[in-house]
Each structure stands twice: as structure tokens, then as C-alpha cells.
Length: 341
Image 1 (cartoon, rainbow, N blue to C red):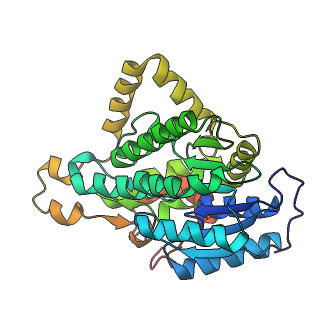
Image 2: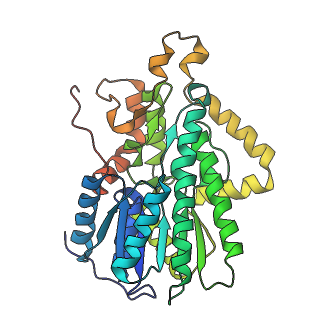
């Protein structure tokens, strides 16, 4: 793939660190920052995936990037990662906290551990990254920039995404609070709330309850045109928000409408969410399925059997073609070909 021509930017020459940067949105943000002339460190848990992601960025931009293996749930590991990035480039100017998980399941198929996992990966990861980075960002001669990736799911609770919504809501509060408390310190905090994006994340998301049915609706909606957003465009919008030091960015028209509606009429929006929840798959346990313990297990999207023809596969195919292509394009794990027609 030919390298894209970098555009002139106020970010040129700055040092940037992106967590969750080996695939999906994080990978695209790493590439966009490299195109702006940033010296980028890409961080994630899986070293092989990181190396593939770094090679993807370098092939796309013609710019070499560094990698750092790190689980953002581990505070000591995060502090080491931040010091490593700062030492490598003689400073740290931009930090994007993007790492997280997505769990899709009815609450009846979950336990409190699912909420603990979401809070640890999404909110805990954002806290660990922000707290480790802030001292370095304050010392940035260019004025440090911190970016926290929230979600429209953190602005209003989304059925079958409750642990995710709770953790993203906490990220939103963290961003607002840090912005207020760091005012006048020469750095900026930008909180981004994306709606549905075509990043291929459905293959990495975790599905519970009737996992194949949950996978079908989630992959269809997250890849549907109009409802979801092209991930390349989303990454560009986020980097522009960093350039302009914007406080808050809500991506996709649907997400903006939902956010405003919830602020104006929260009771009505909650009632509408309840109606939407009735259209989603029921938990096996609610149907008195005594074998529900197997069904209620958690499966990642790439491991769900989609070979058998069924209504769930037909629903998935209606909207997920673009998302499947995004998965192949943005370093998401892609399952092998179906075993039957």
C-alpha cells in the first residue's frame, strides 16, 4: 500500500502514545497521528498483534512507529509504558486512552464479574493511563494533550451493553473532571463519545446469553450504513479535535441526537430503550432453559459459529458486510471461511 502524504499540522514533531492501538480505532488513530508528523508509540496487550499493527501503520504512512506491550489494567505496567514512551522520544506530548472491551449480553445472563471486568479494562485503564501521563504532559513544551475515548453508551445506557455503558459513563466523568482540574496548567483534555463505527470490533467483542443472536444484531447495527460511521472518518475527526484542543466530541448524527434527547427528556428515552430491549434476544434463563449455563457463557465474536444457515446469520449479513471488511482492513482477527453454505 502506498504511503499517504502527511498534511501539515500543529502536531508535527510531537510525541504521542496510543493505548489499544494495535487494531480498530486505535490503529487508525496511530496512523493519523503518524501522518501528522508525530513520533508514535502504539501500546496493546498482544505483542504479535502489535507488531502487525505497527507494520500496517508503517506501510500506510511510511513512518516508523514504536510499540509497547502493556495491559492497561496493571498500574505498574502502565507507569512503565509511559516512562518508556517519554524516554524514547525525550518527552511526551499526546496520550490517547483508547483501550477497552465490549460485552454484549442481557443483564440476566451476566454477573457482577462482568461489571468488574468492564470497569477494570475501560475505566481503570483510562484512570491508570491518565494518572501516569499527566505529570509528563504538564512538562510538554508544546502543551500536553490527553484524549479519553468514551462512547455514546456512556451518555445513555444501551440495552445489552450495560457493563460497557457503566464503564464508559465513568470515563466521561473522568474526562470532564480532569478538564476542569487541569485548567490553566498548559494542557488540554478531550473526551470523545463515538457512536457506532465500522471498525470490525464485533469480532473482538464478547457475547453472552444467546451469543449467536446477540452477535447477529450487534454486528448488523455496528456495520450498517447511515447508522454507523466510517472508522477512517471517525479517526480523522478525533485527531482534528486534538489539534484544536476541543473539550468534547460526539461522533455520528445518531449519537448526537440520542445524547441531546436524553438530556432533554431522559424518562422518555429510558422508556424507548425499554421498548428496544424487548426486541433483543432474551436470556436463556428467562425462558426457563435449565441448560442455560452453557448458553450463558461468554464467547468472542470471532469464535462464534456462523456457518449454519439461520435467521441470525441472515440478520447479520444485512448490515455486517462493511464491518467484516473493516475487520480485515484494520488488523482485527477474522475467522476462517464457513464450513457450509
